[in-house]
Length: 136
Image (cartoon, rainbow, N blue to C red; front, top):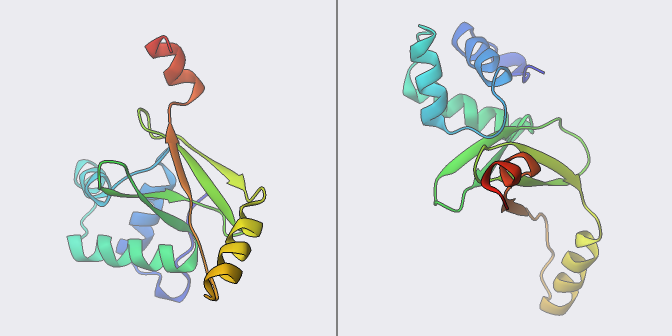
């Protein structure tokens, strides 16, 4: 699925959306820049970062904070609130719907007096395929 960039649809952004659609699992801005270079797509670093920000704001991408401290992105279909389980080895990710966490968030809001407006949960581990490869 190619992310939609709506009314800001320029040729470089369309090219970046195609590169993103061809990726599997999470990716970094550096990965996207390397893909563009390898495929001889002429886009500047600033355009890459602005496009990632735009697609994140629109909900087509979600930003992940990896355990390494690096930021990565994963394509998402804008829909109900969900979380990601990400393989730390191959980068594959699975979207999981909120299974009770919203009640915990509401309880935290009630106890703290804060009006919680959003939350994000990222879980990291090894996917079944990588577990088999590593013998775990």
